[in-house]
Image (cartoon, rainbow, N blue to C red; front, top):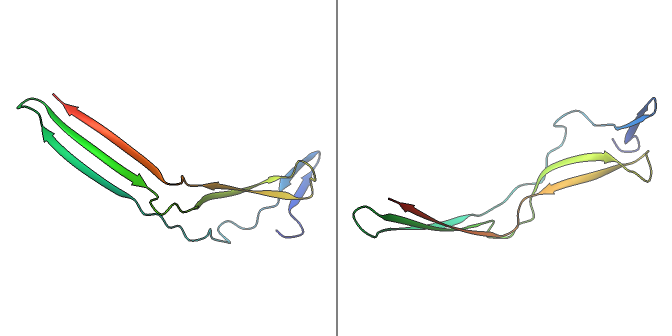
Length: 97
């Protein structure tokens, strides 16, 4: 709450949160892509190769937000934003016997 960010209770200081879900995070946008290829090496050995890219557009999405009491000024709160991973390639190889 603006101007009344923290509340003191005895020797403890807490963040003074607004009502739950009173505000929303910014819109979340992510584009993922994946490709897969299957190969039968023999009648008993089969493989699958997968390649993918998460967050192809390299967006900086906030997925969680919370607040902590400022260690330098207990009358203020510090906003903490947890963000999604940036562009993330991945690859997997599966062997079936």
